[in-house]
Every structure is written in structure tokens, then in C-alpha cells.
Length: 76
Image (cartoon, rainbow, N blue to C red):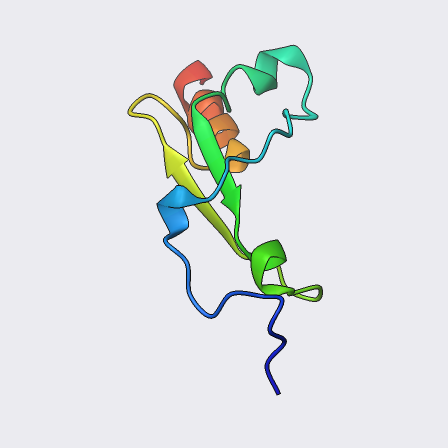
């Protein structure tokens, strides 16, 4: 049932950070800086489901949609 090439358990914080940069244009990309995403699904061989551990710095935003809504409210 289980594939011996994939681990049974790992320490999530010991996995490497993903190196992908934001695809957003610059005014939005700088808002999303400070996010560290560790892809965990690949380590276990998951192909139909993405599992990520995302850690945010104290000034980082969790989602761009919420950030743009908050910014729009302050501009009104």
C-alpha cells in the first residue's frame, strides 16, 4: 500500500522553502513579501492535492484579496 520511496513522517519546518517568486506586478508583489511557503505534498508523493506550510513574517499579508479590500476601504 505505501510506497517506500516516500517518508511516513517528517518535521515540517525542516523541509526547504519554496523558491518561487510572486507572479504579481510590483505594487502587489511587495505587499506579499514576507511569506515563507514549504511545499509538503511533493515529499509524500501527492499529485492531486497541494499541501503547503506557509509562515508569515510579522508585517506580511496572508492573502492579496484581503489586502486589496482593506486598502480600498482606507481610500474611500
